[in-house]
Image (cartoon, rainbow, N blue to C red; front, side, top):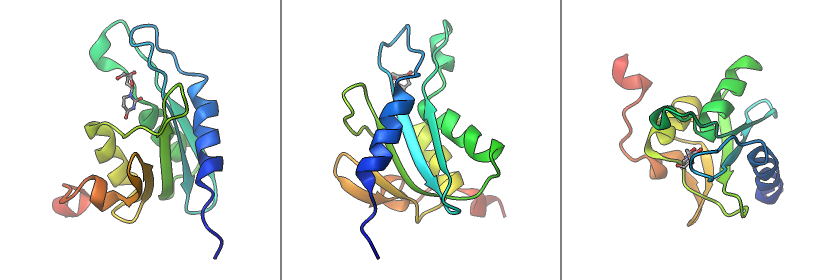
Length: 129
Ligand code: THU
């Protein structure tokens, strides 16, 4: 099987980053992910005068996932203004775990990792079963 094209996914994340609304942090973020049916979903961060309620790029991405038919995330990356890979914040790791599960692959600052390495011993939907 061909190697996954992380650079193309980064390019999609960088394009989404260009739409970020960040008048407070001036730290635009773009996120992109592949869905198990081949769809691409993206998101950008959207801030608010009530700083604490900023929407991370991952929030928009997960919303787009559900709006466009659901499914499971299989590959994920997020980038900053310089197209550098950044790590999802703690809350967004939980969001990604919920929508991709332990097998989701992430391009991280230390290479490709599984979701269960990025959020070890996660609390998840199975704990509520
Ligand atoms: N941010 C994201 O969009 N995703 C993350 O995973 C990390 C942080 C945003 C939130 C805020 O708008 C800005 O980056 C600075 O924290």
